[in-house]
Length: 312
Image (cartoon, rainbow, N blue to C red; front, side, top):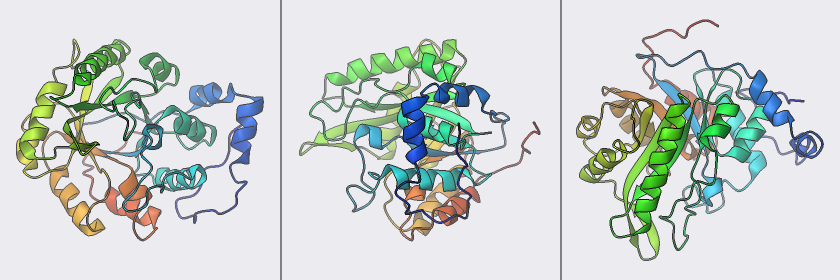
């Protein structure tokens, strides 16, 4: 049993029972998730010259619920699913990056037909955890992603030179890259040089730090044949993109500044060689004006599509 996806122009719903069917399916027919994955029509394929637009929804699994000044913006799962379905209903949105729980919901909702699917693999470095840099792989495995007929897996790779847990994370990331490559699945690596300040982890978004994180991350694993980079938009992105030959998607992060300012930085970075598109979550799912469909459409207009989508 699957449910009908929300249309792109449908308003957020306030019916508290609108996803009650998901609980019923999970209770009575948990194998429905596997059937939905097996029957799902896949994305027509990646092409050079056609940038991809992927919506990210793996933040809650790491305990990161905040958007802007609201510390629990992503806590309401019903609202999150509403927003994701509105975004995915836009034909310019190619797919989703999600943790297993959200991925299963979207499969049951029939919202991933024709979409790229990336699973979130390491969610163990909980936001605020005393050993946050020991970022265990507690989400999707490569084997599970293959069974789901997914396109790849993403791994957050924070590198703290002053924390001994970093080496374990690097080793686990390398093994995950190899496991994905064995199955011809994409390894989307999201590297940062990070530090702990006043008990909180902060990512160093200086240009040189991002370049150094790329140099470390792109050397992980015994092959880079299936490795992509997932990188923040920072100052001097020309130098950043000169540091890698790997397909790169730009991440949005927690929105800081006006939407117009954010989109302007994305537009500039999207014009650089090697940039394959956007992988953005909170900025578009929780825009300041509440217009999810409008934010998604505006972001989609920035992508370069010189190659037509092949017909199925």
